[in-house]
Image 1 (cartoon, rainbow over the protein chains, first blue to last red):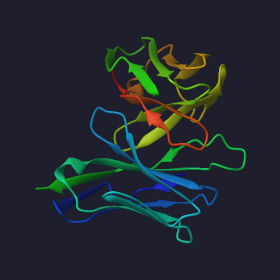
Image 2: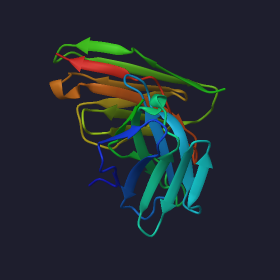
Image 3: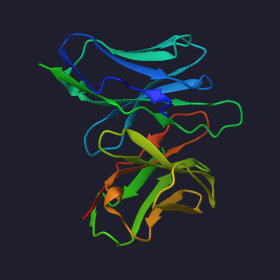
Length: 115
Length: 111
């Protein structure tokens, strides 16, 4: 049973345009959400996060939106750059309530930004 | 600053051979430690996590085991590798309520 779902395995966008990566989750106990970026043969690197008490978090070109009622979050990258081409993983954890807060990952979306 | 070291970077092992992957963390105390595996088309699967020395929890039944002999050392092992153990193995650490930080990974190919 997949608790974190990234239904689009790949996405291709033109340089300068907006990239929107989507993620859905099923566990209503998740209260912290993260996006990671991964290049081939490297470990994922943390990109941006959002707490469930917020609906938006922005960091430069990256913005994460959270819709708790829909159990949906998205990562917006604008403007997209060729260096953004990578696999993006959505992750969720339960921070409060006695859990050790393991991260549960989606399967990832491969973003290709074309010049 | 905190750093995480994972080795080796690549490994080719025959079926039935043992495995030992090591991960160490510097610059933090009592971290949560994790082993993940990335298999083709399956995202990042949590294999083991540890909240302290000698405390190991397994997320999925498998041919692998983990140990934490020291606070900042996490070891992934197998007595006899299977072909299905091939994949990209990632060690990570976090403190509670923070993001996790990953090592560079080990590409294991079982032949």
